[in-house]
Structure formats: structure tokens, C-alpha cells
Image (tube, rainbow, N blue to C red; front, side, top):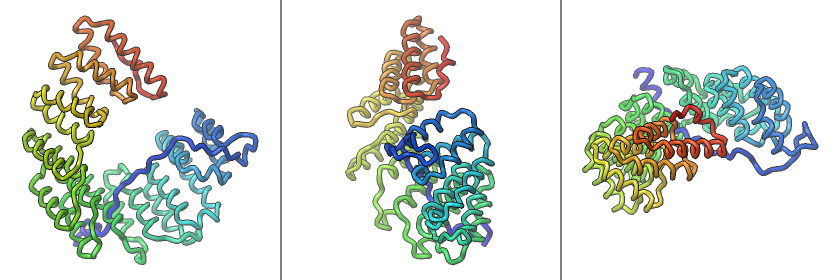
Length: 397
């Protein structure tokens, strides 16, 4: 077997956690006993000087209460990585190795490994994993999967090769589990190595590791996403034979495949099948169908589906607006496009600046300068209140 086939032993699905920006905890920081921890965290987020930020962050991390805020770590590490300060990321994580009591717990080590992954430093994540026994920390499939996730988060073109290098040198006592295989299948599908991803499913079953809904949905998205409908249908059947029932995500993958190929009738039939099995369409379902109708030039059906979204409790997102507003403008239905855009802005949705500009251009073209100005003012006001970093200043009338 070649190296890639050997790689097919493992895989992991990226499940990024949702973090709250701040915690309500008011425990004082040991570095500043008079100041609540929440205030210290806010000050860190406001710090513009990166060197000062790094210094303050390292000082704050001496406080155990501060170290219990993973969401704060993720925000700061992401900022440093975006600024290219990988040296600081490494410095911060290295410093945390001295907290022996916490380092003896694998969960803490996984947090550090995940931070390396967030910063796009998978090789450093792997190095930390190898170092865990020397730091008095056990290594299990939990930290093993964290390293796999770090590799799959990497944007490197050869990340599969790097992943294989890690897998070939990992501790043989660690037996990959279903999450490990799911990670690999996801990585292979993202690289369009669909045959290898499917072979991984075969390998899972051969090793008596049962796939789950995540496994099959990853494969369905991969195959349907490439328009390989007949192959994806075989995976669908295999999923049902395994005793796993498709969910909305499964149906959405199938609906997208038909809609984007212009087979809107077939896509609507899948929608009816979704409802027959007791499921309800979500925003992604409607987005796929709206896109399909817009591509066909059938704006009436696209508008009908948009109205149906609201009745079914589904809110449009930026993808809905990105597809619908330009098409409505092209079709001469500027008033509806404006109403949809204003409603989205008022409800706090992030509308692409380019989409707003398209609408402004149409309003100006129709000599509706007052409406265009009001739209710009409204968008900027909402943007400022939400403290978003959208470049609305570039909007032109």
C-alpha cells in the first residue's frame, strides 16, 4: 500500500467550539488584586501594542483564574497568529508548561495543542504531544485527536503529507477511535481525495469501528459537493443499511447537488422527502433552493421561498442575501431588494459591503438618491453599534 493508503487509518472531524467573549466571573487577578478579572480581560482586548499585549498576557496567565478562560486564550492567540507573531504564540505556550499541576491533566495539554492548531502550527502541536510523558501528562487518543485536528486546520498545501508523517510516528499504544477516522475523512474530502476518503470508511468497518452520522455526512457533502450524485446515493444507501437515519444536513447536501446542477425539480422532490420523514428545512436548505432558482432566472419562485423561510422560522443569512439581492436588482425589483436588505441590517445580520453597494448603485441609477443615502446611514449606524470591522466607509453614492 502507498503512503496515502497507510494514512487511511485515521481521521477527525473539526468541531470548533463556540466561545462566549467574556465570562461573568469577577474573581480578582493575582497580578492586580484591586481589579476584577473581567476588567483585566477587557483591557487586554483593547491593547493595540502587540508587544505590550504579549507582556500583559503572560503576566495575567500566572493567575489560575485567568488560565481557566479558554475563550480569552483563543481570541488572543488568533490575533497574534493573524499578525504573524508565531514566536509569541510559541513563547506563551512554552510558558504554560511550568504549571505542573495543570500540565498533569490531559485536558489542559489538549487546550495548548489546540492553540497551536488555531495558530496554524501543527508541527509544534505534534512536538508538544510527543513531549507530554516528560511533562508528567498522560497521552491518550484524546490528545492524539487534538494533534490530528491541528494538522487538518493547517492551510499548508502538503498538510496531508505532514499528517501522514505524524501518523506513521505516533505512539503505537494509542488506538485511533471513530473521531480519529472522522478527522481524516474530513481532511481527505477537503482535498478532494474522495476515493481515499471512501476507502477510509471501508477500513473503519474492517477494524470494527462503526461510522456515525458525522462520518456519513462528511462523505455525502464531499461527493454531492462535487456533483457525484450516483456515488453519493450509494453512500446514502449504505448509511441507511448501517441503521443511521439521514438528518437535515444529509438532505441539504443532496438538495445542493441537484439545485446547483440546475435540476431544481429533483431538488424540490428531495425537499418533499425531507418533510415526509418528519424533518424541517433550515436556512441552508432554502439557500440552496433559492440559488438554484436564481440560476434558472426564476425569481418568482426564489421570492416565494424567501417568504416561506420567514413563515417557517428560518432567518436568511449573508449567503441568502448575496444570492438574492443582486438578482432582484437585475430583475428590476429594487424595492423588494431594499426591504430585504434593511430588514437584514435591522435584525443585526452581517450584509456584505459589496452587496450593499450593488443595491446603492441600482437606487442611484433610478434617481432614488435619498433612499441610497438612508441605506448607507443605516448600515454604518448598525455597524458602529455592533463594533464590527466592516469597511462601510468605502460605500459610494
